[in-house]
Length: 120
Image (cartoon, rainbow, N blue to C red; front, side, top):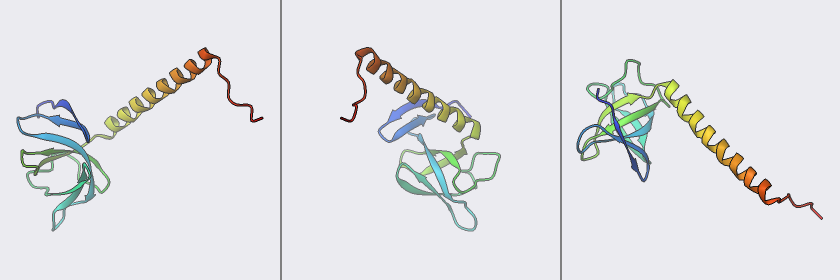
């Protein structure tokens, strides 16, 4: 599978690996069985099948985070599980970014010499 090229979208992370296609993160709501599975992606529910669409060595599970590849008309063409370690790395990155922002904000307050109100 070729490496996905990251682009930005108004709804969050979006990826593309072929002209006219895009991929977004989603969550499996219903695992496919005798009927199609159900994904929640970008505020919408999308159905998917295992055959020809599921692209991971492990079986799909409810609440699993996945990358969902769409064709030009918005149909699901590939669903790939996001590895747990990738989710952990992304959460840690977000936490580090948030912590840095908080520390910079605290430092700015200290530089200005402001103190919290005394309550009097």
